[in-house]
Length: 199
Image 1 (spheres, rainbow, N blue to C red):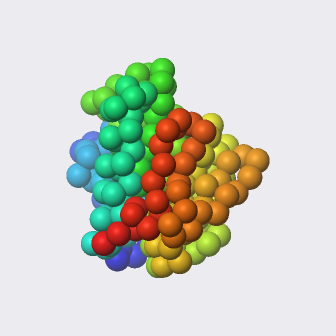
Image 2 (cartoon, rainbow, N blue to C red):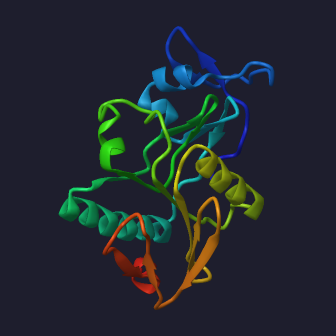
């Protein structure tokens, strides 16, 4: 796992640099977008600072793929949008998050350039798979950021407890084990939590 820290940005070569930067020097979303993909693939932008992302474990990636496959199959079958894994999404003027799976529905799935990142707005559904290193307060903060940016649902997948939390601006729903994960945003979609967590 990478250690968090403050990393500089060199406008001349568009690369993340190894030197430490002053906490007063913050990166903009535009600067983040201009960086080479290889330099940003392991970071999110949070309040103007580069925050390293931990590498996913094999189990984490398998769950992401299970969920992504189910959602992609649904949106393709219904021609209702796009389901994308680990795509950068601009959440505010100084925050870019990378949900494990992002779902963009209807007209919103056609409002962004498929060859540019970050997507300039939050997805309709953001799914995050918990990692053991994540603190509950960080996960809650991330969910609230998504919702404040216009995301309609945030799915928090907790494989250690075999459960999924579905959070909206008005409620939190808990789904466990053999119970079915569904959503009013995805008519006809349902998937047993146990199947999503299968290794």
